[in-house]
Image 1 (cartoon, one colour):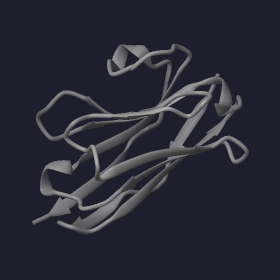
Image 2 (cartoon, rainbow, N blue to C red; image 1 turned 135 degrees about the vertical axis):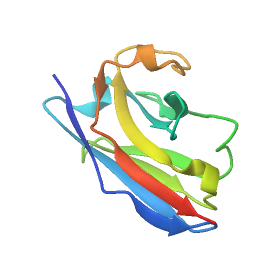
Image 3 (cartoon, rainbow, N blue to C red; image 1 turned 180 degrees about the vertical axis):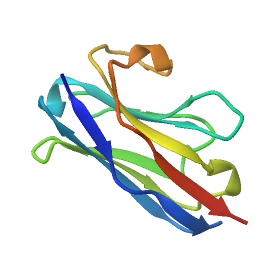
Image 4 (tube, rainbow, N blue to C red; image 1 turned 180 degrees about the horizontal axis):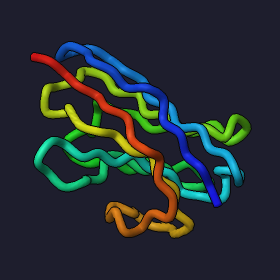
Length: 124
């Protein structure tokens, strides 16, 4: 079992930056591919970014490519999402997730463990 806990999100203005973190307990994160997904109001949960186990290859949704960066620190059992140049359309609940699979892992069904989610609101 893996327990994932996201850091608090927040309310920011368009163009601002925000970093989310996801701390894991129960098992070492180095055994899992990790990802961030989000659910905007009235929409289904969608893939944002993924980082593989090792080496740490990354993959991003087109909507965030060039603005968001996913990274991991296996020694700290933590995954991060650096979000720059935020837009109002980035407003969503952001979830950290872990998968034992390999590949692009853009489907929500690929993930075995989920955090509780954290709200990010971007005002215009």
